[in-house]
Length: 599
Image 1 (cartoon, helix red, strand yellow):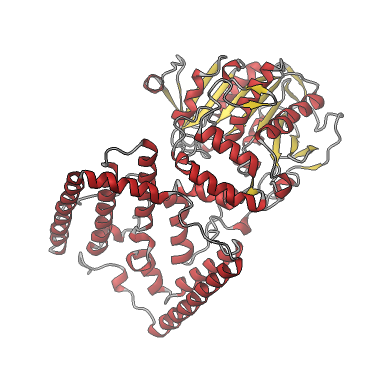
Image 2: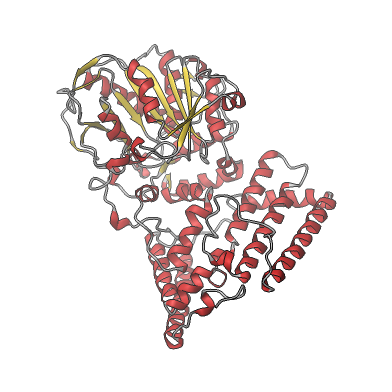
């Protein structure tokens, strides 16, 4: 019989000789790992930047403000001591077999402490609660500092959270009961396997740790991902245009042209057949086109935001009109491509080009006055650092952008894989969305700097004439086409409150729909899965709190609501079209060649 102080780990008996052999292997390999890393750094000869994220100045400012008012810090310290005494009393009562209420519990949705021993073992329960109290104290201490400007306060809060997440007991072998159990049961084989996984990830990242999030052997683009049948009907230096085969005898007259973000590859819209947005749209009777952006190299370093508008969006619209013979086209812009599409609509309005009949924006921001935590990565010092890194090759490495996004959800997208891959020594599970997430793309230098400076830093897109593209001062108030504006409630990249702001800018009919989940799952949510929910408000107030207060919740996917909005404005039914329409000879089968280029 076990007691409150016993745990499953205590009852296991390892093989001392096997455990010793594996620990020696780990020590030897670790020594080699450090040696190889130092040698690689010396060979590269690059001078490391001391503080490329400009974190030090933010914490220096916080410290000076804190010293000016030490009473608050002392108050927080006293509260922490009281909580610690209460935790010690709670733990003693558990050791004595008495029932007691925990001093602190993990936040709802915190998956780190799911293992039963975090609750059943008094020792691990103490470690868990001690960590949670320390993390809360540290976070509250930095939050309580007065006098910081909002941007500095957000940066301090973000990096404090990064620190506390990194220091979680789950991330260390000796304080994670699941890892301890695995170490004893396998006689340390998990640590050997984990070290091998780390070495393989370092090799894949050419000296940088490129953590695998999915079993890459389980997926192949064009085989079990991006499988909707179609043809590449146009190829330029910036994109391939794919037209999909019809699955219905008749289609809506107006074709549908999709612009996915160039920050990732387009097949997020066409994962496996059961959750493919593209396949679903084709089955609804639309002639569907999508842009597959190039994965740029040094030769495209000078490509600008304007180039992506004129040589990307407008060139694709030209091709769709030529192929279908239809002068009215429905469009979709996802994330950053939606930002560009909004500017393009203003440009086309001035040019009296009315070919875009409607636009759907998916998790796309145009007003960056409250852009979320990504804002903390964009100040003058960090922009200078990014520019210096991009100047070496003319582009930003895909892994750097992916790493920034992963930091926004570090426990889910970094530390969970550190535990699984390195401490438990397991291979990651096959997961199509995470495979796509790891298939990153590069950013041309000129384009990326313009986007960060003009949108995130200066919010110029929202200012009439704040930016000029193709000789036209951009004014979003000129956009009068019908707009379907979709956002996701838990989006950490394009916060729904930020997306909502577009309602006050566009002057045509705007339907705002709020989906459950986040930036990806909130968009890619097939109706058949019957997951999440979405909210609508038919009164369409232009104040967010009023919109939320009067919103009606609906179960499942928002896709049918979008189809009900789009179908009536998509024209009459016409015979199904073939790729190329006899006007352009198909170049190759979908998914094309650009999507295959690895970063």
